[in-house]
View 1: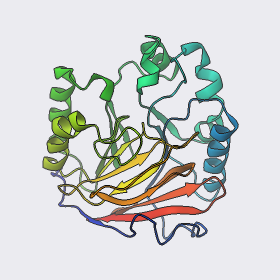
View 2: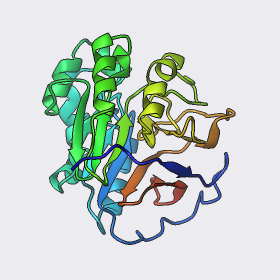
View 3: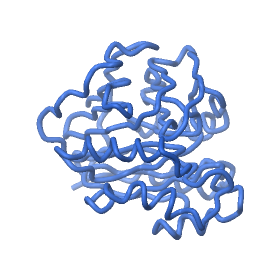
View 4: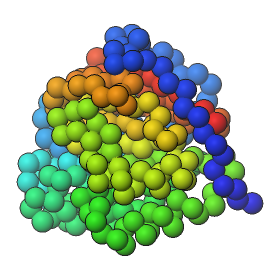
Length: 281
């Protein structure tokens, strides 16, 4: 038996300066069905990238991650496929070897050399947009570099309306954010082209990188948008009318998925909270 997605409501905590920022990460409540580690713009091979990966590994000791979602710019600066092992595979090897399924997203830097297909191939993927089911979570990965590829949008539209098993969640990952108060700002073409599809399908959470910061929006047409693009470097970030929380902090996003809710915890490299939120249904 399958059923359409239930109506989702986002329960938002925090403002531009999150009230939990600087607090220690609390113990996990209950038993999450699925746990996903998320970060973006990591492909530097730097100490900062390694520190993010190490923090993921530390946080995953109590309950290992089921998936690792990397939100693009996998290989700086020119998308050299020969660097994949050094800047992607090696830093995150402990998580993947511990059972986390690697879900890569292509960013604009990955296209610069024209070797984006070789990068994906090295990471076990043969298409830049795909669906991966991780337990109860359907992860829809998009290639926002090819936003104008009509075939991708047709595929997305068809994918989002496919009936799902009861209790399923759908989250979306891409590189360019539809909503951002950061250096690059909102990608209005992403917002116009795909935003209505996310809203119509009641997608609870859409994730992006590109801006090197952490941001969470208030719900936009029922959808919470998060930027997590500070896995290896940061830029300053501002505030727009859609901003719930924004912070220029090296971090990753720890996503805990339960039957009735999703809990997100942005965690900095010292193990302190940057933000936390809950999306309930």
